[in-house]
Structures are given as structure tokens and as C-alpha cells.
Length: 330
Image (tube, rainbow, N blue to C red; front, side, top):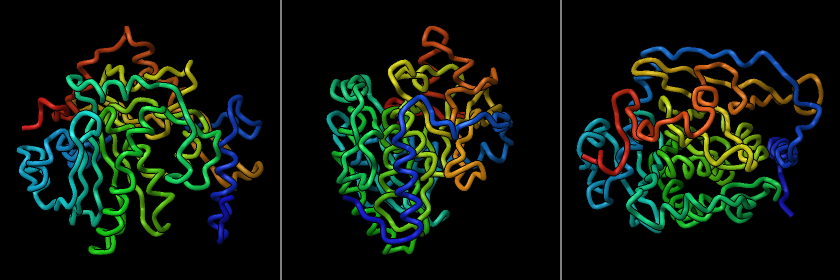
């Protein structure tokens, strides 16, 4: 039994139970006018560039990331201080952890799938969903399920990364933790967001910026994520097909936060269509859900309705001029 010791924790317990409700949605979920698609300004796009470089650097070997000597990606964020690296680019994706003084945040970055490495491909292919590990995700109802391959990969490094994050927070008095990644690394970063939120003090803000993210879990996962994580950007590039897999017909659902790069210099935020008013009609807690149900033609689910309508090369970028992948670690 998982006990909660404060009013805030009690609220969290309640949402865990709501998140565990499977489709069809409970009657409290209703349509609302939250589907307005907004164009991102040039300044907003520019603000994403450092996170794109962090995601790009995750594809580089730990031998060069350790000294933050990974070429253009590292040079773009020169004040970043690496404290931990790991992974073997196969059974365990590359990852690194460090402190970014500019934002007073701890950065955790995961490598995505290298198609030349068999085991990482098999991780992507293990699409059966399973409940979250209760040791890593304490208090979450077993009805909240995620992609088995992603969960297993995440579990391989979760504890060592968490210990390093805690150490850096203590050392630098960091105010937040930022999770980044591309492709499979983006899925790991999404899992990390909730993992960190459940295992760090409430005073530590959690931020996520991911690129080409596949669907990670079921609607209960999406509801839980959207409650816990308010600062999240899930960036899709043009006709990339990875964000529309695994399919919704398999029970998967995206979390909120879609940013769709329609063309170079032109990107929109797609907030979705529905809101969930929990604990009555007064919307004591409000969750926006439904990125997968966006009706605007500029959002991914409409512009790439199936894999035949997409272009896998868009998965690599450019994300506002920056390509991400093993061959772009220069």
C-alpha cells in the first residue's frame, strides 16, 4: 500500500486513480474550446535550439561527451558540465547527465535508436504494454500501462541516473531537471519526466523537450503524465511517421505538448481538443488531453494520418536547421 502524507500527496493519489480509468472516458470528460492551434514565434523556436543540441549530443560516444567535446552540438552549449555518461549504443542507449548553469537545471539526455544496432531496434519492436514498475514509479495504479520495450530500457539506467540527478541538485542547488531525447531517447525522456516527478521533492520543477517521440503508453498514462508534467514540448518534424506509432488501434495515446514543425521556420502548437474536469463541474483540477484528436490540418495526426502519408527521413530533421542522429554527431 502506498500512503500519502500531505494534502498535495492526497491530490496526487486521487489523480492516480482517475488516470487508471480505461477508455471509454468517464462522463467528466467533455469537449471544450482548447483546440486553438497557435503559431510559434521566431523567439520561441530559437529558445528550443539548446535542447535540440542536447538531444543531438546524446548520439555521441561517452568517450567524447565526457569532456563535452562532441563537435557542433557541444560547442552550441559551451557552459554545460557533464558529470555522468553511460550506455553501449546497443543493449543500453547512450545517456548523459550534467548541470547547465544558464538555466540552473540538471540535464538528462538519452540516445535514440541506431538502426545499425539490433538490440535497440528490438526494444522499439517490443510493443506489448505493461504496468509501470512499482519500485520506480511508486503509487501508480497498475492500469497505467506503457510500451514494454521502452519500460525495460528505462529501468536499466533509472536508478543510477536518479542518484546522479539528486547529487547535482544538492551540489548546485539546481531548481529543475530537464529531460531530453530523440526517437527511442524521446520515449525514455517521457518516462523519465514522470519518474523524476515521483522521486524528487515537489520543489524541483520538471521540464521535458523531446523530438520525434513515438506513443509511449495508454490513455491512463497520458492522463497521469499531463497532470504531473506541465512544462513539456513534444516536437514533430514535418511528415515524420514515428510520432504516429505505435498505432492508436493498439491502445496507445500521446501525452500533451505537441509542437509540429510544418516547414522551415514555421511551427505550431497543437494543444488537443478535450479537457477533463476532475472532482466535479467546477474543474477543481483541469487536464488538457487529446493531441491525438487534433482536427487542425497543421497538426501531425491530420498531416500524417498513416505511415504511407509520411516520410521517415523527416525523423532526422532538420529541427530548425539541426539534424539529429548517429551520423550527425560531428
